[in-house]
Image (cartoon, rainbow, N blue to C red):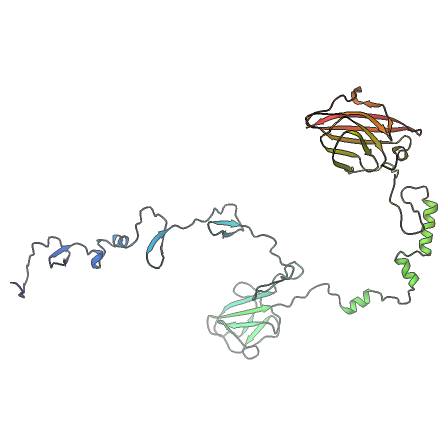
Length: 418
């Protein structure tokens, strides 16, 4: 039967075709049957729709909740980055640093009261500092029924039609209408169309509002509120206002010379408007809240004679380790004595802070204007040693008891701070 055609009416049985399904041949001409068609033969190799789909997709094992992605050539599964937790992030916006997403807060005020210096083309700046309405441009949008010609009242979102005549823009189904030709708008609250609308036509009206600012100063209002300059004022009279020495200034100086000559609150050395600062005032029952005390901090080591100028400081702090025992001399300044600054029955309290190294030193004597004093120490014990690796604090209250001068000095220290 080689190379012969033949016909079979029915009942042809081929022993090699044992499976019901699709009949195929191989490259040698052998025939066989299979329940499925392999992918290489244009099939799926599967017997169900679900398995056929899975045969074409990349391997799904281990890719739960991934999404299918293509690079333009092949497909693959890729993971979706989850959104950060929303708890406690009300009002924040989602942002990314290029690697992972996060919630972030809007910084600064949303109000923009100052005109931006470099606005982006196409942006509209609206002054929102509260001095004017925050919305100066509104959109009125409504789906209309057939036969509508008059537009007024509220739109589909309850916005009320309100516009400045000549500045409105009317759109019908997205097409800008021509003022006067297609509609009439004069009242500011209604617009009349030249042609009636069809059912479901969409009308949108952009309504810029001219803002009326309050408290505007007009020329006429300014003229009524302010007095014109009197050009007849003399140079001398203007000089009075400028602080130039004048008859008025002479009277002021005379009053100061008689009424306040003994006062330390305000003094003058010349008949002019320049007065000396307050010096040693006597204040009766003042209330002082958290007064500051002038402190001198110096990178100096205590040794020899340490000069304490009571006129320029209340506290003296040496930050370099003491190098030897020292004497503390209290004076007004390098050019004035403490005796000239303190009246009898007055007192002054000072503090001296000394930094100590591993070898500690101490104060051996106290002098006032170079004169030795006997100090009454707290507990009745004078200093005999310092405190190593610390800051020693000495404090003295000096009371002037007589004009000779004579002093009583109360001392404490060294108190260790470490």
